[in-house]
Image (cartoon, rainbow, N blue to C red; front, side, top):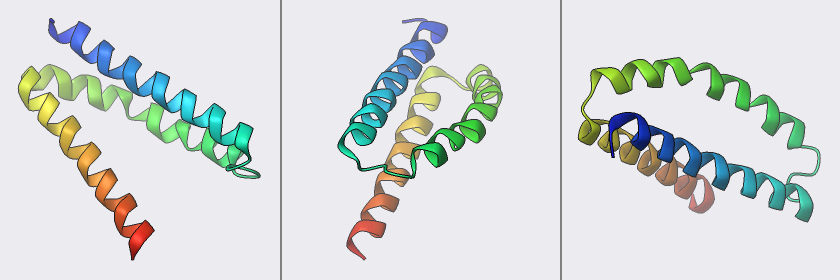
Length: 85
C-alpha cells in the first residue's frame, strides 16, 4: 500500500474498533455515567491528528508502523499495570 492508503487503513481500523467498543460498553452499562467523559476525551485525540499527519510525512512507513506499535504496546502495558497492580 502507498503511504496514504496505509494510514487510512490504520485510521479506519481504530475508528471501527473504538466505535464498536463504545457502543458495546454503553449498551452493557459499563460506561454508565462515563459516556459523556468518553466523548469529551475524543476532543484532544482529534486535536492531535494534524501532529500525526506531519509525523507521517516526516517518517517512512516502517518507522511510522513502529511508532504505532510502540504506542499500542505502551498503552497495553499501562492498562496491565492499572489492572493488576
